Image (tube, rainbow over all chains, first blue to last red; front, side):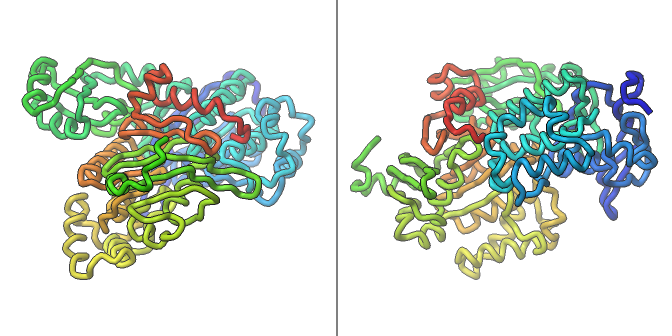
Length: 309
Length: 258
């Protein structure tokens, strides 16, 4: 069984279902991940992301359906898979009362390797926390914990990495750094399957799946998902943003209206509504400094539109 | 920074939070370094900063949970050092991590918090029904909180945190992991609370949410390095988004432990 064979898909998942008692967590999940790809699973908490990751890393049995990782079945080939995958669970699960270096050493030893042997792979990441290698893992800041966890997941030179919400709860600067590291790992040929609740991280993946209530709503490249948004979308701004939401929803031809940072995004039926009509409706309600622009959808607009269907 | 505000009864009335030279040290480490700011009645105030910048420490002092090393703070009219119990009774608090008791029913959670915050007995039942109606949760009154979807739970937790009509509510990353639609409904609830005159003090890692705030402060290494409206901050830092403002500021951090 070789991993270098480029014809083997990194992940093949077919009709996977999993329920906890009567609550379905995964419903007919099917997808494939190519070698060397960054594949993002994007959706809110409770959508089924962690369950999917646990099925693929052989920690949980699916109720039905089949899945394979690097060509090996997650049930029959679980021992082989475990040797070849790196897994970083959503919850920080290293040994809090061991030092940074001790944690890394344990993971290396468990996989019959040494820190020295694969140091080149973790150098960029680990060198940032190396000055603190004698500190207990429990005493690290959030960003440093993530770097240590990623180092531990990489130390046995896996061919594929499963990262379950590596950026949750960490600030925008650390998030950006982490994504830069993932790009570097990709360039070294490692396949990365990563989940996140942050929609703005979608553009950093090669392909993404939007997951909600245990179902993949759509799988495509970020660009493909955006070009699949067929509604007319406008951004609207005014001097009183709070009142503007309610008033926009009262206008005929406004289908949906959501706050989006410094704008409100509305999908409109442009057979009955023009920007001029909308502007005069809003002026009648006492709004001023109104700006209305047609815009291209973002991933979050797409997610909400798909969720609405 | 203004200096005379402590003697001015008008400011004390208008500002729900007034902080002057507030500092907290843990041994030789200065977690909060001489911060000063005011937050007005009904204002939505975003409190941003990188992990480890000192947000949580500052917030704990403002909630009366931690004594400052030096400096002053007045929250809801009470001194955070000498009147911390009054501070606690006058504020609401909600965090992403803990907000409600999962093994209690929806109405039991409301009943419990209302009791703790001293809402008059006769008001609790009618106000509970009113709240559930507003949320569209009438059918969930007897549901255990743990079986509610996360987004619903967070909306309920926010309603519970302002049930006793506090002057100010502290929200610590209230929308983490919540789906995009519910996240926006949550912010519409924040707008409503602010329209009623409740001051909202909120931390978030979603930079688009910083845009919803009237003013935003950004902490770097224990200091407040920027404080203004999102529009003015973007102008000042020549940035197109709050995300860019944040990154430009946080890059100045001397703390390499991010």
